[in-house]
Length: 182
Image (cartoon, rainbow, N blue to C red):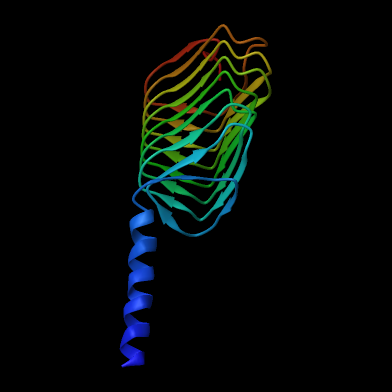
């Protein structure tokens, strides 16, 4: 009888943990090889994700840091005013949108949608990625390197200071404005 009660309690705890995965979780610290629905990196927090599977979206708040390595995100990675974002050797089912933040690095990553870098104030790097949509870089002021990416759509760069540097990008659409020679 006691064995049956223990089994029921363990099963109930397991169901509770599964139900919690259906919600947005707040990441402060580290997430390992787990599967979650949505991730929020709160304002000012630091989150390291390694081998994590996100069924929805990752949102990075103001002043926050996201370090993601070997992650799979079925939705988007979105950062507004983040201090630092690094996505390496990962797969993103949607787009990566990094706006009005600090530094950002996207390397060795497959992005099904677009990679958008807009109005960031520190050094940016996009290298060795496969991008199903466009790579768009507008009004960034900390320096931008775009090299050896395969982009199915367009490579569009406008109003960045200094102008982007790099090369070796294979672009299915057109290379435009500041990125014409990259």
